[in-house]
Length: 167
Length: 245
Image (tube, chains in turn orange, brown):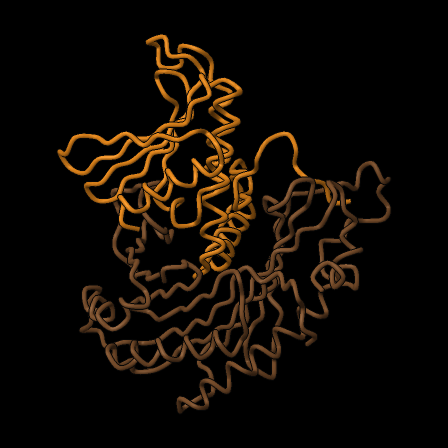
């Protein structure tokens, strides 16, 4: 039977463990890498899948952070922040993912940061349950992006970010 | 091939690899933008870093990046053109329309690329269809939905036969076409809850295709598409047909 992975997200592509040192292991690794390069090739879908699975794995890693992860007393992201972050991820399209970095917030929560040239924007899911963003270009003052926390609000915030990044 | 109301095609693409003049540089590709920017206004640069082709720069930034190609998307973000010094790829994402519309738009864009880049020859052509099947349930007997899948030995007791996620890459020789059809089959994150998502990807390519004229080239794509259809139909079961009908 084929079973769904429920314990934690799996990063794609599925790579072989890098612990074999013999010739056959090396050859297999080279073949797998070559095959993966061919598979991912010119496909937009596969590029999106790789990026999305990478973000999911990062999100999972953030769920395992402990308080004081930055050694300055930062709280770990709580369940509310993780739940909202997963909702934000659902709204990110292939184009957004290209520009996304995901980071824990020193104030408690998870931030999705987008950078393109001199333009920056982020949307943050806080431990208090708020979803709020900011955007700026170059040395211009930052502009707050507010949401009401609903799916419509998240989508509107991401639309504002896309317009800001001109993507 | 029967028409499927809910065709699971998540990406269909036409890919043409070429040999260009050695004098051409990456910057020369930018000339294409002027001719397509009204239909494909969103541009990004695709980088090559340590042998890995990347989309964008934020997720896996590298100091050793070098520009590899330009990517142009339409406003709806469902049509994507990639131009590179080694060729050209046109992708149609969801919702898929028809092969004819894919082929015609690819041909229109190819004509622009060809006119500006003057390729010396076509070195490889490919048609690729990536399907994503969303199968209800958190455990699935692959044989119910697929005719091509990793077979786990029946000699194992049932409790030791569970598997996944997996990635299968199976190059199938196409002697008459002098090409290879690669079946990539993988489990990915499902689009709907409590489902198993299986990607069924058919990548059919021919190196040094037997074509000398443009009409021959585009007729050849029709042949590749027919072959892809043969494989798709052979790889799915009636239960899958029910899902996508």
